[in-house]
Length: 308
Length: 322
Image (cartoon, rainbow over all chains, first blue to last red; front, side):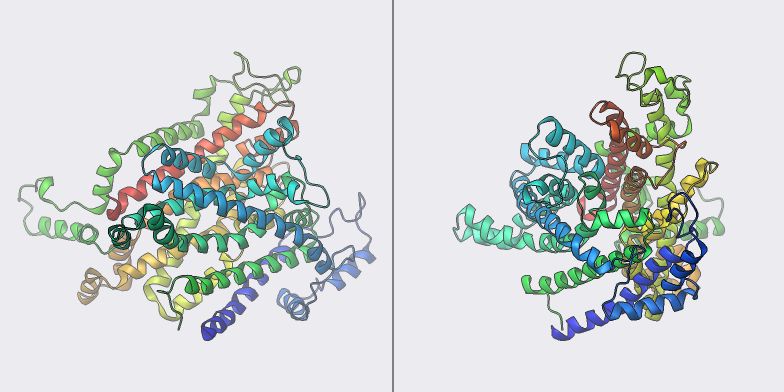
């Protein structure tokens, strides 16, 4: 187990270096003037451009630039934006909001997704099964930003149940509606995954054995079938947590949430290269670490899987 | 994928060739005696599937919108607008109402299909070719080639599709005179650069399953080169999962294009697409929700029909589900 973890951590290193290099190259080396529009309507003064090019090492060849960036990164220095704020402080300010949003979204996925899946599997080909299959198919087909607008318009503006936008404090109540929107797609996948697994397990030999031992139906389903069907669902939800943190750009934009997604979108639009690279690096790190954690957990939940 | 039907599919063309070579005067074999291939089995299954028929009809309608939009708009032009009619609701003259510039929303929605469907088809084609090629190489040759290609895939896999798309697109700003095809090409590139990894992973694992099958070993023993084995035996027998995923992701790319256009980065006006229409309608959602509703509805139905088609194809191609 320990050796497996160490091997996986070592394998992550080239992936992290490669990914950050691609992001770095995309941000700094693709055509387009990084100083366009930085100084209002006038072009930037030559002295300012020269100072900034020097500060961000833009005159070095790309591998050298990236090498210098990487050396700083290893020392925990994410660099500064053009305005002089450290990238790390911007990330530290935005991250808790997104983390809370993703956490609520995951809770919604677990509670509603899993119960919908169980309900559908127990009513195979019945009314609830068909209803859940059709609704999840529709949810999968509608792009998230359309769901976001519909939810904001219906529940935020027309019915007034939830605030249509989120204030600077981002309270849990304000985040419920955005979290539903963020969770909607994965919710549909969780419900379908749970339904498929449970329906398959209900036909398995061990369930027949449990029933013929004389256990009650509630106990057979709750203790045996549902527990075993949860294993793949747990992995899906775990991997999804990493994806939700990064995938919140659209949802955060619609509901005006000042999280990681909003920060990233704003810095791409204003060409704050250092912030973009920093945020994406953190996101990729979180994504890879969560995936590793899920793989390790997988072995803990399912005793049939052993890492040597 | 090593079921006998599939291997028969690969072997069938060879035997037919051999027969015609030996005696061209033999009467043609009745079709019922020939072993049916996986693909013809799947086709029989598909023809009776309700989901397949519904999604095929819907996709056919969308293709008509793409190629001959004027057939469905009764000759109206999407760029003829009248500011007097700005934000007027649906009526018998304009079924879907008028947008902010007084353009007919119905006509624009029909014309919007072209850019969206084109992005979906080309992005899928691009990722299938690139991802499929890398996957076949990694899976078939294994060893250090596999290690390098798989690490490369991991690197690109770590970057979320939307993030990478935004990065690429913000580096290639559009000017006034970029035409539809340049715009579409840009978005296809942005989606394709990051989208190929999932295709690679699927193709690699399905090639690995086929690589050591008996018919591949036999072909090698008969002296076939690697290129011939890949073309004639490995690819035809490992293609099924790729096709299923490609169909489903076609819908996904249409949705991704709309999301990027909605963020103001994908296709740019004057190009009409469902994403740009939704982006235009967004500030007026309180006063004129129909402006947003109709393109969003068409977009969702298009995505839905490709997902349904993919589901139907998956069921037809998977012998376990029969």
